[in-house]
Length: 570
Ligand code: SF4
Image 1: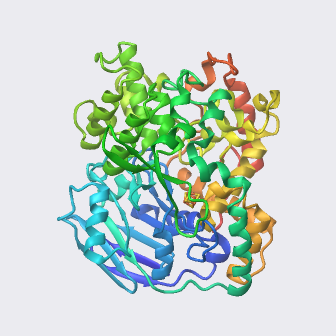
Image 2 (image 1 turned 60 degrees about the horizontal axis):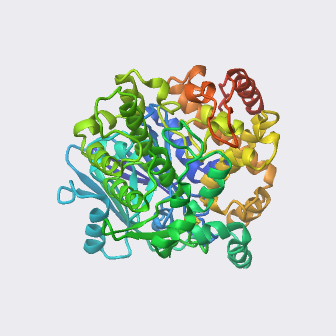
Image 3 (image 1 turned 30 degrees about the vertical axis):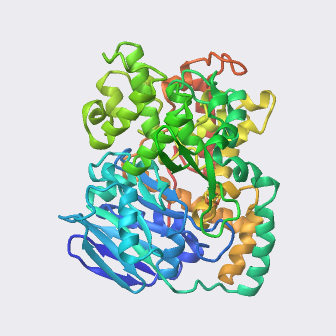
């Protein structure tokens, strides 16, 4: 069912999903973008549960959030894991579609069939965790909460939506969109079973999958969480350091997954996940206990800011999570400010790489829009432009990349340039394409464009079916097709699933075209195309503009997009 909520009129409507939705768009990513494409003018905020959420298939618990990004002006799309998507399914709603802007702070309360828009003034001004505490105390531990912190209230353009005390829909500013609508939280509880076409056969398969998910392919995530790969990335010359001026950090051993074990308290898992990659850490210095930090946070607020103190990174992560701001964007903004300080472009002697106290202070200023933080709160492009420093800003379409240095990774460089939501590492995971090679092929552009396209389609299936990408060594497309056939009762092949993914991605691009995309928006930051890396083993590497143009052309051809424009028929 789709739940439609109008925050202006207060109207709440429930309707069946259009008949062809499940077959064509699968769930999650597919549902979110087709609804956004159809209703773009209404500037909605859309939550969509993954197609397999609630089935107890291992790691099927993803929730997607969609809207027009306040940060980039293009497609806004972000995912969080945990228990929310599952609870949406238990309540009977695959999609929650919210339009309009309320005049006063409100929250959406969904208790199965009973749905109401309620006054949120008593939690307005509270951080995301206290907000979650408040609703769990009021409605019981079993409710699931997605909320914004003060950054979302203050319309910081990269504010995120927080769920489960640390799971974030972090990218593209969906928390800012929620703040614009004065929607503090969605509180949900359901109690309907999620039925599949063949429960018995599916259950047998799930038992097999649980064993696979506990196997070798996920060991790194189980033992060290996402920071498990940091050491290798540093040794490979792919760890962003000091605002991307370097690709390895001389103090990296202090911020590895192995080092994080000293701060580890216990593991945290999402619904139906035997991997449990979440690591609760604590810092005595700052007296905090916090889920994470994840690899992306460690690179952004650690090596990229020249910081190697785990206590500072844990505290910075906690501040970002409770205020509700994206750690990747925040870290990149601070790294840029540090570089501008060191170059004397901003006159502030404290703006130097490695200054942890300054980092913590800037996070507070960004969330509250005070001091220098007020200039940073609108995102990296306006901030860099103010100081005529766009050439030092690592961004595409106004959003910064995930933590893999593109100057030595051509497939990844292409993927961040052409991605619909900005410099995104998650849609294609293309760093894996380059890093699969230990020889010169890593640096070659040959065949990489097609691989990027295939990888994007593969990951679109994770986001649509609701599976966690950290289980990518568990799920290939054949297995996804087998599971989807058991869930829906309609036989689907791997080839058909891939075709559906490509069509979903076409819709994403078509949304950007409606929002004014032009071919020059698919470009690389100057630092990627003109700055040879200074450090071994990637010394001298950068992406030549002509190589990038070749890959871009090949990529558009692989997608069947003339000059980057798809033909979309819903
Ligand atoms: S692997 Fe980690 S993020 Fe993914 S579902 Fe499991 S616990 Fe959640």
